[in-house]
Amino acid sequence: MDKGMLNQRGFTLIEVILIILLLSIGLTGVLSYVGQAAKDSAYAHNLSIATTLAQDLMEEVRSKCWDETATVAAACAGAVTPSVIGVDAAETRATYDDMDDYNNLPVAGNTPPQDAQGTAMPVFPFFTQRATVCYVDTAALDTCVAGPTDFKQVNVNIAWSANDQVQLISIFSNHAL
Picture 1 (cartoon, rainbow, N blue to C red):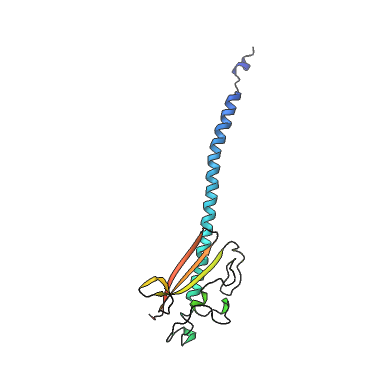
Picture 2 (picture 1 turned 120 degrees about the vertical axis):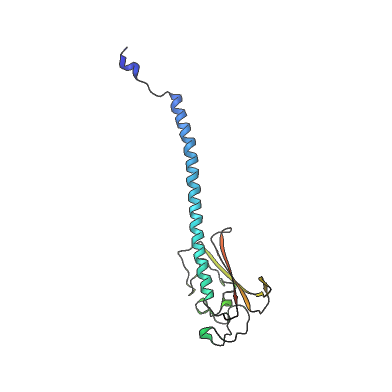
């Protein structure tokens, strides 16, 4: 027999099967990790978008007068008599002028969310935008009351699924600093 033939060695069928088995078990674990990392990344991305949208809406609300009845409307100053919560006659999102106009936003659905002018933002098709405003008890600022009082609670909610949402709650007062 040729001496070169004796030194040649290959893999047996059992060795090849064991290598394939070990690789498939190892790759399954790695691929499940990659899949979970992709899900976590998507959640973080959606959370970031929802947080930004919620902050934008809260700042939009904050930029309005505390109430419709401010005697110096241009500066939202002067004596204020708290009025009924809700949208005033013939107002649209673009013409909201006080905080409580945002109560029960959206009026006619709000997917995708709308900007301050009431224009849909189609780049966020899976997000919904909601807001509520209520008078709160001066002794318990987390309790909505029929009012009027000198405090309003604004609750902004941005959701991208039934279970995933960002909620911001702020209290605004009828007092000058």
